[in-house]
Amino acid sequence: MLRSLIAFLILGLALTAAGGARASGPCHADTGDWNEQGLANAASFYTLEWAPFGAAEWGWETYLPLIQQEIGTDCGPGTPIFATRLAAFQQTYGLPPTGVFDAATFQVFRGVWQERRPFVMARLRQECPEPPPINQLGYLVASEEHADRLTRLLRRDVLDAYRRLAAAARTEVPEAAADPELLQIFSGFRDPEADAARCAQDRNCDGLRRAVCSPHRTGTAVDLYVGQFQGMGVDSTAVASRQHMSRTATYRWLVANAGRFGFVPYVFEPWHWEYVKPWDDTFAP
Image (cartoon, rainbow, N blue to C red):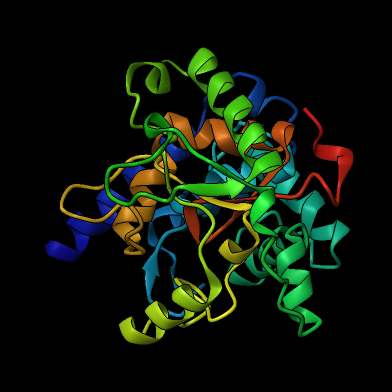
């Protein structure tokens, strides 16, 4: 009886994600034979059991905004249009163009996103970038700092870009306009020695949450408040916490618009963004 109830609920969720098997509209136009793939994606969206970053997760909702941005569609994961765009991405990167989301496809997405972070590319070359000279750092004002942690400093050009980004978000996103806490910074430039000592003390130098060589040493990385799951910290890496953040209008705006101001995301942490404009003028606002 319980199994039947669970199966019924999963089917209901799948059809909701798919927009209904007989739905109409732009996300269902010219669908060809992609309805079956859409239903498969709708089901795995909630039920996929996997460990993309080592810990077990159920479903892939946390990563949907970045995936939609990458494949160029706002259509839901259960729609045929999403499946066709996903298949095109798979084909571009040498995967079987099934149109069905799976762990192998996600790893390709992850690689694409990581390659856009100059800091990650430097680390692959076994380089640890030096921190900027102190005269290249600027102070945040009180309204830009989150109460949980006072961060104080960013590289001056990054601070200017952040201020343009925050101003645009407060104009374009009602949620951000109504809540001054959103988009406040709770971590910017971090002294390399102090940061390495702290992650060693806390035993979280695992390369996901913290690293001995952190992008925050460059003064180009910012941790932005994009919401907080009840009872969890502003940078909790728990699945429920990250999923909650990925649902916010502010985070979704960042995914779609942060590149205008020179920032790229770190997929594992919805709050973490890195400034890349000096290396890639594609992101000029």
